[in-house]
Image (cartoon, rainbow, N blue to C red; front, side, top):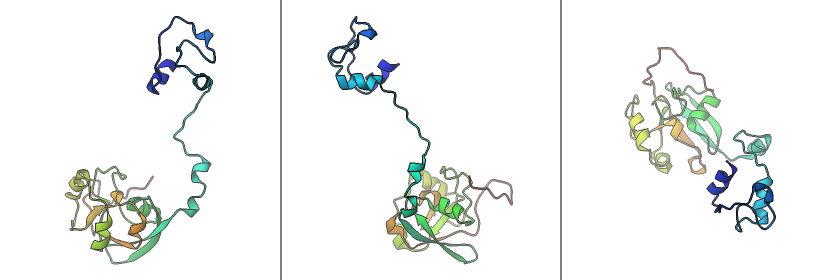
Length: 182
């Protein structure tokens, strides 16, 4: 398995008859291409993890934020600060805005449908993907500036964006069901 990993890293492994125990700084069972640096790497255990550590969260209080205003179906507005890189669906859930997101942002429904209220901001967004357009076709009250909240990501040029939440969604869940964000 170790040899396979080295091969994947691009090392050329020469087959020789030398036993593994004869590794030295200049020559080993890997042949002449095995350098002292590689010998050190071969004896070092590296562990990798996708789990966040405290270091990953340090300094997030200084992260750049933009101002976003959600306008609900009754016309009430709620303005909030949203960190750059966060989706509008996540921002809505963190700020108790009633934006459903039944598929939890996996681009499999249209329940996080929002309407960008200013065409200038709409034009600053990346073009919707084919998958997003397919889901938008199912959205209630579709407009020329409709987008899915899970696909609108906060970036500095969107500072001040206003998003309207349609009066209804098309959800196949039981009436009255309100999903809870994870």
